[in-house]
Structures are given as structure tokens and as C-alpha cells.
Length: 277
Ligand code: C5P
Image (cartoon, rainbow, N blue to C red; front, top):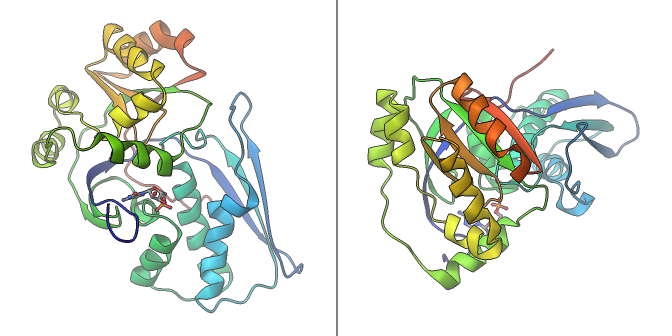
């Protein structure tokens, strides 16, 4: 662990086409009002105001000299919450981009990335998205070529895992083996889904299995259902499986549906924050 409580990462982020929708409207309330709603069928607990990265993003912009006549932010959550899928980080990046414009703060790209890193380690990645090597806390990014659109099955559990706690468990287990990111970067660049699947590795997986033992059996079930490879995403509890094609993803999903609170089929997506109108 670093003196600031964070851990040094070497990780590859890969964006998929699963997104929340954020509406940002100017008001004259003088306040930042945040409303979050869960998409139908999505379980889990919405974040408290004090831990909501949307409010945090607005607060960081105010620290950077913004003035707020009033704003109402509405988030429709489709990305499972506290699931290791980066949904909160993506929301924060979207709100930083929107409020930077609405409030005329004028932060340039570099300053926005810094503001994002203040909100959370994964927020800087979310301005761009796509495939990137993340180092240091997760904020030092190098884009990686990944030309193939890959298909994934996400096995979602609505019972959340807290990133901080999973890092805490990892501290007690210690390092597993040294999996460098270079072979994975090459496999992604070559567009070889089979090779990508054979190289999946997540150091936090063992910690997530320690915290939630049933996840290990669910990973095996994804492999038995025909996945090319499977792993915990982020700090869990979501498991993802790599499929050969969209059809193959459906066949895997059909076999494991009963094991998860929700099973989603997603494919690679080159961007994270996108302006809708
Ligand atoms: O940066 P963020 O607030 O998203 O991180 C949540 C928690 O995850 C941190 O408080 C820290 O405990 C842990 N973390 C870490 N090392 C990282 C990123 C996150 O220990 N590189």
C-alpha cells in the first residue's frame, strides 16, 4: 500500500456498451440537486448523498472556481451499482464534462482529468473510455489498440462489494503471481479473443472470492457454460465471461441465468462519456 492508502496498479481497462443516462438541467435553486433512479429490474442500493460521486464531481468543480446558480441532475442507472463496473466513475466523468460546459468553468482536458482524479481513481479513464493501460492509482493512462469488437456475458449480483474493503482483504492475502499487462496488450492489439480470454487475470479476484465465496463456483459455471475465459471485474462482485460471438454470448447467458441476479450481454465500446443532445 502507498502512504496515501492507495495501491499501485497495472491494469487494462476495456469499455463495453452499457451506460447510464444523465440529464443535467439549469435551475435557480442555488443548489446541486441529484436524483437517481434504477432501471426497471435493477436491484442494489442507490448511493447515499455523502458517497455519491455525482455530488462529489459537482463539489470538485465548485472548488475549481465554478459558481452554481442551481442545477438538477437526474441519473437513470442501468449499470449495476457497486458492482466493479465503473458506473459511479462514469457518472462522475459525465457530470464533470456537462457542468464544465453549463457553468462555463473552462477547464481544459488536462484540468478536467485532474479534477476527475480528485473524485476517484477510475474517473480519468471514463472521459475517454475504450481500451487503456492504467498505472499508478489508475489515473495514469496509455490508450491501447483493440480493434476487435468482443462479446461478453456479465453475471451481476445485486449485493454490492466495496472497493476499499476488497483492497483491504487483498492486503491480508498478499500478491498472487506476477501477471504483466504486455501479453494482454498484444492479444488485444491482434484482435484475438481466444488469446485475450486465456490471459484474463485480476489480482483482486482472490480477495473478492474470500469476501464472497460463492463467486468462485459462479466463475466455474460460466466456464462450464462454454465461456472462453471468465474473471471478476474490478473489485467485484460482477463476473464477466468472454464469448466467441453474440450468439455464443446468448448461449452462455441462457445456461447461467439462474445463478445471478441479472445476466447481461454486452460488447466492446470505444467511448465512455457521450453527449446525447
Ligand atoms: O479512488 P477511489 O475513491 O475510487 O477508490 C476507492 C477505494 O479503493 C480507495 O479508498 C482505496 O481504498 C481503494 N483503492 C486503492 N488503490 C487504487 C484505487 C482504489 O487502494 N489504485
